[in-house]
Amino acid sequence: MARKRGLGFVGALWRVNLLSAMEYRVPFIMQLGGMMLNNVIYFAFWVLFFDRFEEVQGWTLRDMMLLFAVVASGLGLAMMLFGNCRAIARIVAAGDLDRYLALPRPVLLHVLASRSSVPSMGDFVFGLIWFVLAGDVTAAHVLRFLLAVVLSACTFTASLVLANSLVFWLRRSELLADHFMNAMITFSLYPGTLFDGAARVFLFTVVPAGLTGALPVEMLRDFNAATLGWLCVGTALLAAFALLAFQVGLRRYESGSAIVARI
Amino acid sequence: MQRTLSTRMLLNRYGALFRMPLAENLAEVGNIVSAVLVMTMFMWVFAMLWQAVFAAQGTDLIAGLTLKHTLWYLLMAELVVLSKPLLAEEISDSIKTGSIAYDLMRPLDFGLFHLSRYAGHVAFRACVNLLAGGAVVWLLVGPPPAWQGLFPAVLALMLAWGLEFCFEALIGLAAFWTEDISAFRWIHQKISFILGGLLLPLDFYPPWLAAVARVLPFASIIYAPGRLFVDPDAGRLLSTLALQLGWLVVLGFAFRLLSGRALRRLTINGG
Image (tube, rainbow over all chains, first blue to last red; front, side):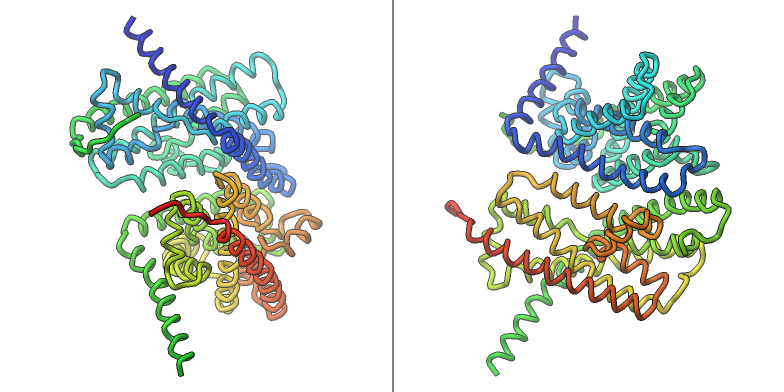
């Protein structure tokens, strides 16, 4: 019963976020369309690249399309549903966590779902279109893609919560959190086979971009239970660490005593 | 005498505006550390990618460029992009919040006010980025292929940032007509990346596209300084500077025209 009420609360937050974003129609459409166009133009780099070199370490243009589809939809989904995962450090540093602590709702869930990013909706739609354009739209492949997107979104959310939770110990770590997010996106959008040895370990631990792009695409290219298992275990571990870091860090939080009205 | 004094006073004012961002950046150690991290990350990823490409092609030379040429070129291209401040956002925010009123009250030219601050930010960030990125590339592929390319590249870089200033200011001023400029910023950024050759030197493009891209202002901003740096020659230097100056006149005129019209539209409500 309590869980049902919790889901209803999150659903209500998402509804309010969507309605407030759509209140300003022109900026809403411009941001959504602009982000999609932005991604299309960015992908032109890889079209030119593979026109010249055909393949790099076993990756072709189609694999890059799948990679862009998974990463864009995964990141888009994460930022649409839990847009504040990238802003926790700023919220804590400004003492704005008080408003969430005063309410009888799960703090982390409330913080995360309180913001939806409009441009990310453009990312999400772009990813779906890119997946269709990459071909192989069979029922099984669509299911695998959706699973890959959900796991990628969970990884993005968890790793950003983890990076942003450093603010409880380092205080001014907003810039670090921003760079962490940029690193996640940058490394996610390159063929996974480029990185081996220590670089590969780095991309599955310190900056777990391997879990948001390369591994989900590996699962799409050649589906097997082992890859899916590794992906699920990695995502679950990250989510557990993120939850733990936020809960432990929250005990160190000191109110900014700011008096703010939330309307 | 009067004229000389006022010119000197103006130079002092704009000089102070140029020095202010230097002090701001020096005070924020986090900005320096993050600039070093970002530059290191990008050059490392590029090195991985291009080492794999050259190995797969089984050759030391692609479209006249070696791996060393390519990585030093990419460093200069990243230097242009990563060293500039977010001017469009700054202008747009000042329009939306109304703080532009304070900027206009100052006895300074609107364009030169922003240009002085922009140049201060660029000067500081470019030094940090060049040192960080240069160290990474040097470690990976050795010293630059031609030291004599440094001076022509610095000349081209200054004009490149002048052109980028015009683009950013034009996008920022669009906030007078539209509520949100982010879509313009993203699209300008990505078109610059592709037609400027940020991720792939234009020499690797299909010939027809490379020919078109080379005459556009985006290549004058991103491609030209890096290409001059790795392969300097007098002919390339002259044609690059001529093209950059030509585009600077066009974009500078567009900025003057648009800023004049935009500021005439400005209505400030109360105080």
